[in-house]
Length: 267
Image (cartoon, rainbow, N blue to C red):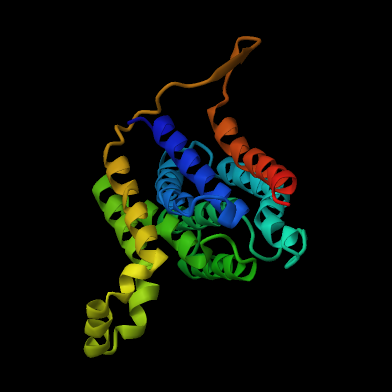
């Protein structure tokens, strides 16, 4: 599979997820499960993108630009269901529960720090200080997937080779979806065994989230390293690739459409 095919799969899974989160009980619950496939794919390709980009600062700039563009439709889509039910407002905030583009931006920012530390352009202590501040920002602004999402991106980049990166993706999925369920029982083997024998763990949506997230691994394993078909625009003998802008632009556009559809359909 090419990178563009996998990105289209990630976009499609994300769309299902956001339909499920925007419309709640009005949408099939398995839409949210399908959505778990998308973020591991984004983590992998953001990390890989940092390995091949010619200008990581421009890369960060694009991510930050779309983070700010996306926040208003993101908040409207996220709060629409509660607002229509009379349990919330349509408030927009750039300081709480911010969208995933901020997560991706901070992940790439941490990767740029790592690169500069590795090439000795930045002193290790100063680099670690900046890294800790980036993680503080992720926590303070409550970016999607939080500190974990930022460190996941950085870890996949550091892993470097495909097999190691897929291993880090797998470990991240385990940590994200199973650790919160089983960690309370880690200190007691008896409690954990009773938990399994009772079958209670089968009723957790987390199990479905985990299994669907794992589907990202065979998809990434099939990645052939090629970009695939590109959409290009030529102006005055200068060719511009539109792929990245279409993939970036899909995020705020589909959220705006979902917010509008939620306003019209949920009565």
